[in-house]
Length: 112
Image (cartoon, rainbow, N blue to C red; front, side):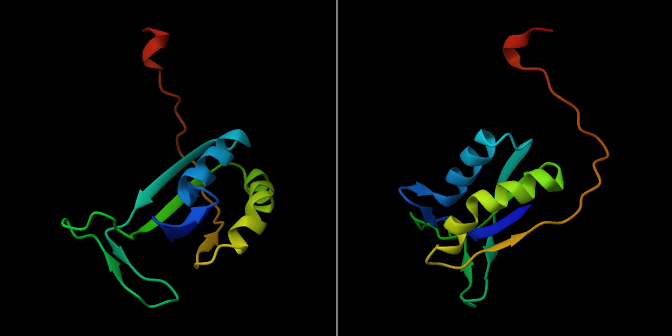
C-alpha cells in the first residue's frame, strides 16, 4: 500500500506520516517506510519543491506499507475515515508485489 500525501499534512495533532506509521506498527503491519520527495504535484497542480533556504518545506511524501493484501485492506478500513476527512488531497494505492527476499536483520543488542 502506498499513501501519497504532503509532509505537512496532519492527522489530529500528529504529522500524517507519523500517525500512519505508528498505527501500522500497532496493527501488526510487517513494514513501513516514509519517502520524502524532492519535487511533485497532485490534483491541485501546485508544484512543491525542496529549497535549502526554506525552514518549513511542504514536500510530497509516500508512506509505503508492506504486508499481505488482506492485512493491508483491513488496515485501510481502519484509517479510511481519517484519510477521507483530511482537508487536503492524498492518494492511496494497493498494488500486488512479488517478494523476492525478506531477510530479518540482527538487532545490535542481540549479539552475534
